[in-house]
Structures are given as structure tokens and as C-alpha cells.
Length: 472
Image 1: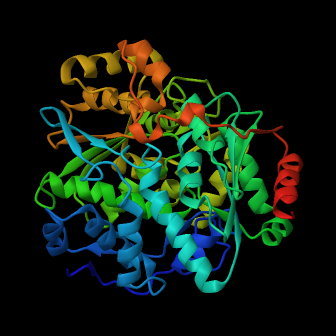
Image 2: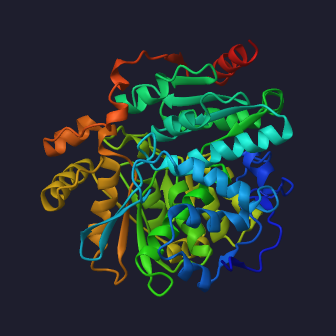
């Protein structure tokens, strides 16, 4: 394949502007930049029209390969990357990996839940875990992976890193605010390098603790911290591949498509932006939020106050501080690191006012909508009645917003189904009367013993847990 136009050796820069550029492998291992910013490529490679045409009909692994190659530089050869990709997706349960289902005229559902932990996070983390292991083995290093989860990232990361000799993994999740299946997927693995910590707080508290650990330079270096949250650039670019796969399935590059993305931490929809910058002809990228609608308020008015998180039936979206929105702001402010730093300082007060020019740039790329709890329930019921498809509440948020936009765009709408309905059986049953079944290979999940650690919302307490287990 002809690949990308004008690709040079890729370097990654921090949104805050005070950290030195890194290559791909160092960006992968570092996660959060030392200045507190997030890494982005110093330039956007573009897939040629010829490459997009040749990807029509390609298997998913080939699409991932062509998406990633311009970003990895010299850190992975084509053969190495091909091997890791084949290994990463071999255990997905559907032969198409991410099948596209038509729900209605011009409305499609992209199923992203056929991986080992039944959520879209598997698409990145199954590959990123293998990339970590490859680089760590080459360098003879060991890392401590620290992550925060609102439900799905934690189990996907644990599945990707469990049993590795080169990494310990610590996942912080909000106690009592994830579904039982999400919790069990994190607490039943008995590998010695796996540690799930239930924090007395919401997801934003867990995320703040992780950022604080990375900003503690002594702790960060002593334990060689690595990140697998969507702050890690490798996760974003790995997810961009399924946007490209869906686009070429529906006729790209000759046809524009639009995507509706259930969004909490902004990582998944920024992967869509990455695909757009690479040349996929995307008409609209639509942020779909639940009742914790700070992103919808930001994109509608340019101003929003951070409110208390309201627990919902779509808990993976119960977020008020979206880390990856920083990347979107950086791009929309023409990569002005000084402007970005000022906005992040403003956000520390609990609210943010986006400058008019930056807001205009954001609105040129992103639209938004929200679904209430009742609308989410109603959508699950309607989708089952009309299509015989059971969907999870997060996917229903996206479908509800997509249905509201069908008359506003002539391009096909692709709504992302981010998790298997069986991960949220109570919410699905309440809305539809149906109890979704787990895949056969997961039906012993409720028989296995859990290992649960509790911690207060306190940095020193969490660091103490990590020290105790890493120093054994």
C-alpha cells in the first residue's frame, strides 16, 4: 500500500509546551507528560486516497497496521507491528472484529464489544499491552502501570497486562459506582501483578489521584510509572482504526460519514478526530453525553461549571473532568500552549470560559447532544422493539442522540456501541424486560473469588498501597 503522504520521523509534543519532544516508544511508556500535559504528534500524517480505496474490503488487522505505521516511527518494524496486531485481535469473538449493523436508513451501529472484556477499550488495550511488553523486553525495564477507570478501562487494562513479568498494574475505580460485572472483571483475576483499588469517591477523584501520582516526580521515577488511561497517545491512535474501518465499509473516500460517540473522558471521540485529520472524510463528530453533560454544555456555549457527578445507569460516562478534552482545546487554539495552560489553570477554579475563536474551531469539528435517564431507558426499549437488538445504556445514549440528528445530515450516521449489554444487566432488564446473557466463556465470573482493596480519596494512602505491593 502507498501509505501516508510526507511522513517524517514522528515526534510527540506536550499540550502544555514545557516537555521535550519524544519518539513513539517513549511516549507510550511515559503516558502523561512531565509538565502535566498530554502528548500529540508534532504533525498529522495523511492516508492517501489510494490507501483508503485499497482498505475497502481489507481485514481489520490490515486497517490497524496502515493506521499505526506512520505514528510509530522506527520503534516498531512493519513485521513486528503485524505480529502484535494479529496476536491482539485473535481472541475477539466476532470474525469481523467490529461489525457494522444497520438499525435504520442512514443509521448504523458499530459494535465494539466483541473483545475479551466486552467493551471498546479492548481495541486499544489488547494492542497497547503487547506494545508495552515488546518495548520493556527490548530495554530490560519494568514499569508500574497506574490507571483510573469509570468501569471499562480497568478490566480491559488488567486483561492486557495480567501475568506480565515486566509490569505491575494498579487500577483505581470508584467504590459502588461501577456495575457488578465491571467490578468482578477487575477483582477476580488472581495474577500477582494485578491490583484493583476501590476508592471512596467518584471517577474524577480516581483520575485526580492518578494525575497527582504522575506529578509526584520522586514517586513517579522510583516506581517507573506508566499510564494506560486514554491520556496515553497509543490508545487514541489504536482506536482511530475502527473509525477508518467503518468509513471505508460505507464507501470512503468517496462518501462522507458521521459518527456519534457516547463520551465521558473524550478519548474515544478524539480518536475519531485523529481519523479525520488522517484524511477520512468525516462530516460530523457528535459528542453524546448522559445527565453528566458538561461536554455538551461546553460545546454549546463555551462556558460550563463543574458540577457534582450524578450516578447514572451509564456509569462509564459519569465524569465531569474529561482529560482528553485538553487535546481538543489545544488543537482548537491552533496549538497555542500558552493559551492551553491558561485554560487549564482556569479549570482549576471549577469552571471554564472558552475564548470565542477557540469555541468556533471546536464547533466546526464537534456537535453534541445529551440523553436523560428516561430517554436512555426509552431508547433501549425502542431499539429492541424495532430491531431486536439489545444495547447497553451507554450505546443507547449514542443512539438517542443519533436519532435526533438524522434529519440534520445527509451522510450516514454511525453510532458507537461501546459495551456489551450483559455488562449492565440490571439497567437493560429494567428498560426492556430482557436479561442479557454473558458469553459462554465468561459465565463462571460470579463463581470466582474477588480480591477487593479499599482506599480513601487520599494520595498518601493510595501511594502506600502501591509501595507495599511493589516493594515486596
